[in-house]
Amino acid sequence: MKFPPFGYLRPTGLPEACEMLAEEGARPLGGGQSLLPLMALRLARPRTLVDLGALEELVGTSRSVSAGEEVLEIGAMTTLSAVEHDRTACSAVPLLSRIVRFIGHPAIRHRGTLGGSIAHADPAAELPAACIALDASASIASRRGSRSERVEALVTGPYQTSLREDELVTGLCFPIRPGRRTGVWEVAPRPGDFALAGAICVVYPEHSGPAGAAVTFFGVQAKPSRVTLDVEGAAGEGGGRYFQDLADSLEGVLEDGHADDRFRRRLAAVAARRAFAAARGCPPEVGA
Image 1 (cartoon, rainbow, N blue to C red):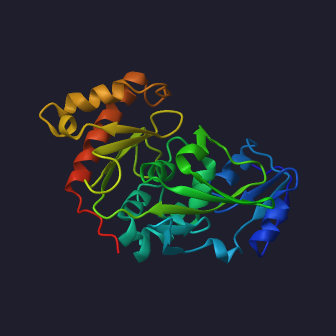
Image 2: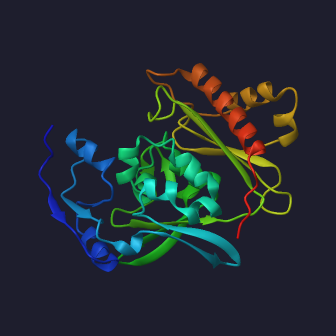
């Protein structure tokens, strides 16, 4: 299929990019793994593409202290493949490198970016769910200034966010919480396909964060949803029934040609139970 007509701009700095995105009909172009196929299908018709590939300030990982808490910061133009193999990211928040391996295929991960995945907000995508599970925040910029918003609030629905048309995700900030344990599991038709149902479980240490554990579902509802777990109930002999009841309590479960309501709830229960088991068996995060 042919692309619709569009203009093309390639800024060399963030202020210049923000000015370009303020023009009507402008859209940012990161790795292009979501936007370009939509354009080829004529489902997206931006007037101008603003290519962010030259913005080196939006690439890379670092550890810092914010509001008294150690955090991992990742630039929005950092590719998924780079995160998968980045030692700083792997040591600070191990879940990121593990979950990136579920995303598409190596060729997609070499081009796809963190910021693009968050802004696209596919309900079956792994990265927005991981950000919600890990209490991550997104840094956002426009020519009006900058702001920060938790990803859980930023993603408002299927392919929908609270971003204004001229706003750009510039980075992600993940709290580093020593002692936290994480696990992920998903069910997909084939490796690299979008998940029919997936779950990310976080088991918190007693001295940090909320008590107990939480599971974040993706590919199940219109947006990822986080649910608190009763650790004793989840780990007990009736754990299978507990997770099925949890999945049955979810509202607005998606139905499509791959799975109806009942089947997707069953998959969600299996994914959550296995993610919980993986988290309990995972070594605790060590922090610095």
